[in-house]
Image (spheres, rainbow, N blue to C red):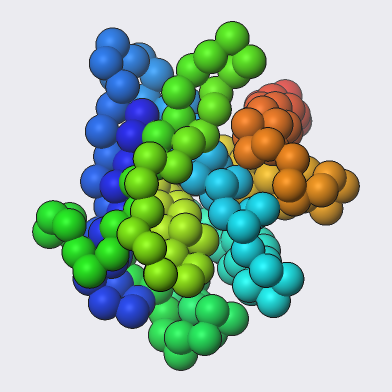
Length: 194
């Protein structure tokens, strides 16, 4: 699955998803989780300390709020951009083509498992990869049912656990694999709970 995130302003982004050939609709839920968590893993090694702290805090807050959300409309203030030097709430709007800046990524399947890749990124955009990952997470959660939202939140929880224990320079595919396994384990435990 591939994704483009276009920025239409400092706090406004549109998201376009392109399914991989032959994978939809039977793998839709898995592909959405993989691309959401995969894109979230990509900026980790590239962000300096203060931006990493802001990004990690934004991911954590997003995951907690989405995990608690019921089906239906999500609150409009899921991600604050204050930590990125923008006094605004991230707004995901309908796709309107390429914007001022664009981040493109995909997740490909290999013998090593799913591998997130940055396909292109405009130069000089600061924390655009991190904000693009947050915009994608909002868009995925908005379209998901309760279980899909929980799977995305648990994947992000797993990603944050990986980076708490591992160096941020480790390959994003390892972080993604750990995060997906973490989410599967937690979802499986929820399915068997009385």
